[in-house]
Length: 466
Image 1 (cartoon, rainbow, N blue to C red):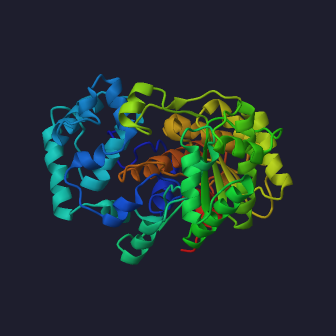
Image 2: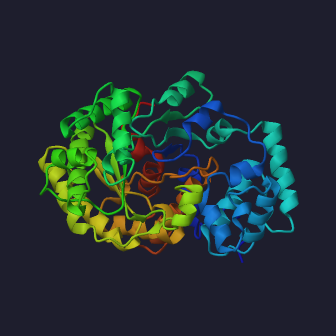
Image 3: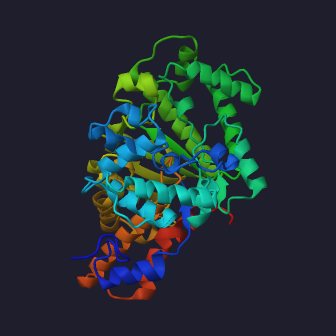
């Protein structure tokens, strides 16, 4: 029987252990998509206790606690930090098969040097040990980022954001990583939302113009893209529930209709979204940006809790849209417009793994090796089975060696241990292939593949000056 979470945790053969220890372990991290707060990074306030770091904003942990019948007051409510931590420990003790069990113990080992197995009984010991480290090191966001060997960190930012905190972080110099913005224009694409007209007015105010028609909207958006580009941004990101494709309506007519307070049909909404994505893709391509498309979330399912707590607090799930035909025609329209940028496709529904993995090959180009990417296993797939399924689909159908690898997609400053988790799973999968005689034990080639997937491919792909 193997010891729980020893040095060869998840590394089930000698080849896997060699690949991880000699090639993956010490590679820097290029975190090209996360939801960390630039303001928190700049202010860099020391954390007061382990609960603030452990449970603050981590909706994975919140969902698990709810599933164990823990009252919301111990999750997002007014119970003390100690009581929340104790409630979480009592749940985690039984989290067999859940990646949270591994993530949490990795966080304790790497950042707090705590080797105890979490139980309700030793909750107080862990609480005291962690809080002692927090106090002695004055642990803050920069402490965790710097300790994690992060080279580049890309946040998620609205087009009207001033990006003031990114600039202040660079001036302050307390974070070793390059902290860059990423352009997330969901609010200007989601024309069906009730606050769309208010948002367009806010965008106009930022750009010093009164946006009256679609061309003026695109002018304003392009101005903001240029602003982001000058701030170091090289990545955009779009959250698409399904894939919008309709070219039967004028985007200008739909836009004016919405601004006049008229109702829109589903086809009109899709036509606006489709045309806007094509226009934005053209601009991204001109600037050599990468475009991320996150497809397949069913958001804010619990309307009562949405009204109480807002979005992104653990009440989302996987959707089952049909996406292949519309995604193909959307990407083709971008290509025909000479404006298909480097693109990363993510699916929240693993039924579409092979849809995306085969879609890549339709639009690859010699201008960039691996121009079309199958994004790392996302959100609910961010666990061993999900990662292996995503990587095997890519390896079966594309150039796995060009994969840009892992990202955190997290609001937790502790989540960089998930890169270690990913790297162990990657090395174990490759090790199994070698041990089974499916690939030669050529460590020059294998080592290059591992190092490229862990960091080098992302560095080349996103073209960020280091």
